[in-house]
Length: 176
Image 1 (cartoon, helix red, strand yellow):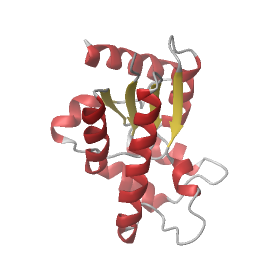
Image 2 (image 1 turned 180 degrees about the vertical axis):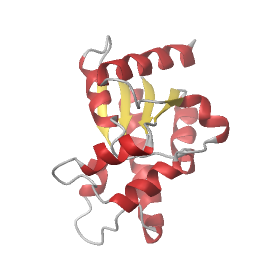
Image 3 (image 1 turned 90 degrees about the horizontal axis):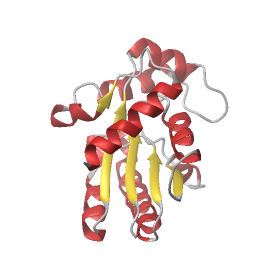
């Protein structure tokens, strides 16, 4: 039995990693949490921060690799929760690979208000992006999604558990 792909996306600080962890830890089937940031930190020489325009080629390569890894797990029967910044501009490799492999693909955007995004994003520790301007820019990139707006969950007032439940319901709705 094939697995499925859930792309859980949104700006930095939206709660993607925390929600993905919750969803995968109590999943009813074998499930993989694929954290896209890992694919970028593996670049040791020549890394360009992915939010910069000059990272376009790097981003195309990395997104293609991520799409193939996600589909490889799903072909093997694992459901995949892919956690990362995958805007509409980056969906084609995932759509193409899922279609080729006959996999269900669900796209969910977590989008808190700008104030909440900035508070969460700048308050993170470690190697996470905490710079205000790139966070604002990425929040703006998820502001008007046209036909994909139906995939947005406003997480401004939600707890992490409420958001995880909303994502689960959205996936069930999209697969029905």
